[in-house]
Length: 334
Image (tube, rainbow, N blue to C red; front, side, top):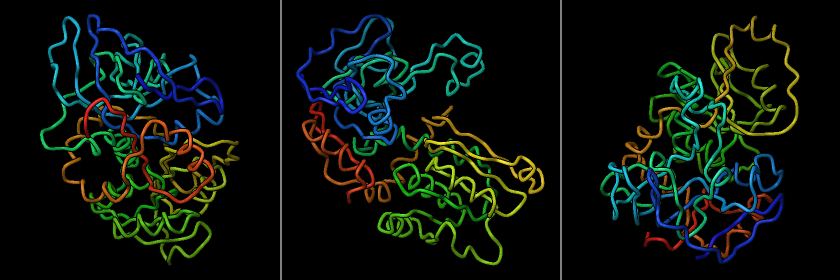
């Protein structure tokens, strides 16, 4: 079968590989319909930060149809359309026992710890697949994982209803964060150096465009979610946000943040990290049908597997394109 495998930093190859074997006990073989390229995929490709095995079929955001199930699998059956939980958990550490899989002591992700979804088929632990709701298309199901990440960040921020929220970074996660914040009644201010992306997201959510060092109004917002991971952006938000609110960090960046903790104390400000998601995947999937019009504006026609390396190059170069790139993997007709 065709697959896109990461061999090392900067080394991504489209290859012919063996189709996964029949599933064993507690496993599910999924024919992959659509997969999404995530910013963390690009980060791993560029830096090798999370390469734990190589070569590995990349991709942790995908959906498809069950081809076969192993013994003791009851919640899905051959023919079912499914979405995928990207987290590869040990299930036994203190965090897993406490229901905090996003900070599992042995946490890995599909596409890194095991082969992922940039292929015609993927062999997965049964606990990582869920039956898709009827009528939700694959193009939305492939975005369920990203939406869960955004929902986790919005939930962690705990902005009161009606409180303005700044979103820095208008990539896929930033766009989804803005969509969710607006959906819960929070006016959104969008900040991104790319004017085109910023304008698109602002139009989708009815938000306000702004500059990081620009005019935020007489009463600056108290709440923000950063999806850039850039220390200069985070530092500016800490300086400029109004007191009594909070800043949630969901972006993966580089560099060190110079932080005076007294600033947080004097501003009575919370600073929270948001890693992957906890129990937000099922609620995110339940939202997909309602969010379909907004989500469709983030994507374009899917590319095929052979076009993935070029798509990585274009995104890393900052070239214009859809906010979310989807891949037609050929495991099931989208």
